Image 1 (cartoon, one colour):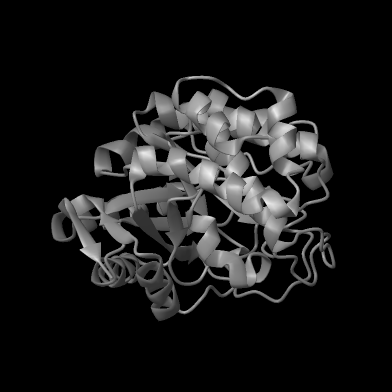
Image 2 (tube, rainbow, N blue to C red):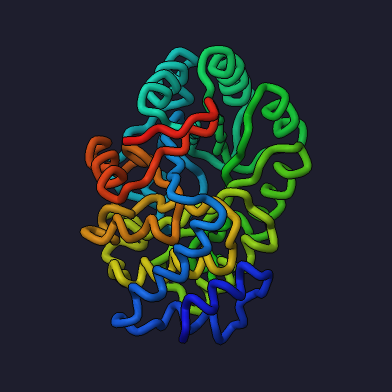
Amino acid sequence: MKWRELAKAVLSGSELSDQEAMSILTCPDDELLALLDGAYQIRKHYYGNKVKLNMIINSKSGACPENCGYCSQSSISNAPVNTYKMVDKDTLLAGAEEAHRLHVGTYCIVASGRGPTTRDVETVISAVKEIKEKYPLKICACLGIVKPEQAVRLKEAGVDRYNHNVNTSENHHDFITTSHTYQDRVNTVNTIKEAGISPCSGVIVGMRESYEDVIQMARSLKALDADSIPVNFLHAIPGTPLEGTNELNPRYCLKVLSLFRYINPSKEIRISGGREVNLRSLQPLGLYPANSIFLGDYLTTAGQAGNEDFNMLEDLGFEIDYVCSDESVKV
């Protein structure tokens, strides 16, 4: 496959065929650098050498009634995790201050559970209003399945983006969870869009799905028109049903990121959970197809030390896209 030619076709408006998509996931390892070069041509067209930084605060942890097989916070997990109700406004503000200090563009307020309580929404709204007065941050909320009226209130408070991942393909969904449907997730994304909030929706790769499932994930997010696509790679946590699952290697992860770039050329593609344990020494190469990463820790797993991420970006010659203050920060 001539990967640069495929990239040019994508930039001209062509969509990948199923055969072309499969050829990316099954790309011979000795063609990997050429594949990444093609993906980079697309990424560079839309984002240049800029990288968007995101930071998570786990605002409500554990005790989730859902039965998602990958999650350490779910009702069927035996993993030891901290359990607490929604943190107070001051804690959310402190997290925003730290995000601003580190030139993070998007501050993500994440909460466990099927959906937010009225109290949860009120706390987030109160914090977001004050954060917006103090810091030039984008705010992404991830609170589970929201009602239309809740989505409208979050928008009015200043929430810029809402994350609700589809996680896997529709065909594979029941293997991962049965406490909600795939359509529940799609409906939530549509609710967010109807409220005027930018939709963020992504996936977890490595949960015993097929290549066809991965391709369908990328296509479903294109159909949903998700503005931001976090690509997680399973970090199998002891005590969860997927404990011991180890299907990934760094080269395949790079092929997955490339697939998502070819299918969703203009979208923000973020290397998310599991980056450190699955890409390992090849993490820098992931930023040739992707243009965004999380800085710091995830929900219940540790991320790479922040200074290592900054060093990585500097070594790559990339710039931090600090979009909220209209400035790019060289690292």
